[in-house]
Length: 299
Image (cartoon, rainbow, N blue to C red; front, top):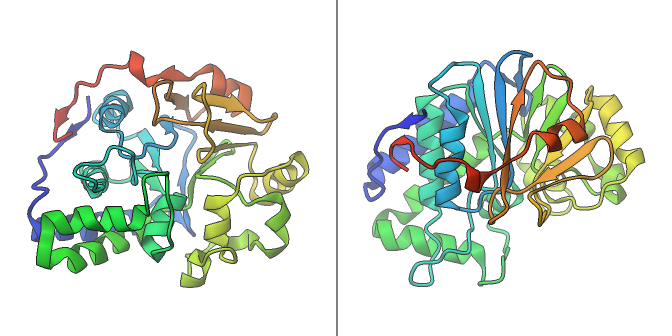
């Protein structure tokens, strides 16, 4: 069972404090090296794909993560915001960010929300859409609806939280989980050291920034994956960002893509002592609809 404290999602001061404290916890976590979190070959990592403010699946993920059982249990989360469940035409997915921030503080070093392209877009205010309008405006409209005159302070605290997110999680046995990978055609402009150092503001810039390339890429080829694997000491890559109708899909021997935000969304409980292969990860997938969504504390 994973227990989370209640959150007052209407109290601007409490929400601002929550995001700042969670950002500090993530940035100073012992597992953080450069811009990624490193995990040992001990315990379990629950792999998830894009979430996009899917509250029911969030509850199921946290039930399956079972973070209270052992400090060696971990959960990777990605693409938290900009869902399609609008209320009065507004996006209130800041609440999902607050839930994740609360989990970061409740289980320090065990919760790993990696930077996705939608978080990066919100951070840089670069327009993005899932079909219902400009997600940046919809998100900020939801924050303003709740917090009124405190909107800018809340948005600034959310930006601090975004800036503290790692680009990925790397296990001791060579599994690298990131939201995506650079397009193969952009590799000449990509800084391979980006995961080994702290991020700079220029890394977030659209089209040219290395964090932007890492979170936005959609076209990967075997030669590129072999080159990245050799440079970064990786055996298998696990990403989100793709639409995977069946929930999880192997894209060759080194790459697996997964979703957690639709009816066939999945999670993968991965033993950190296992040697990662794309086929092995795919074989461990569990449909979220098969998991109980019962959990303690705030959903």
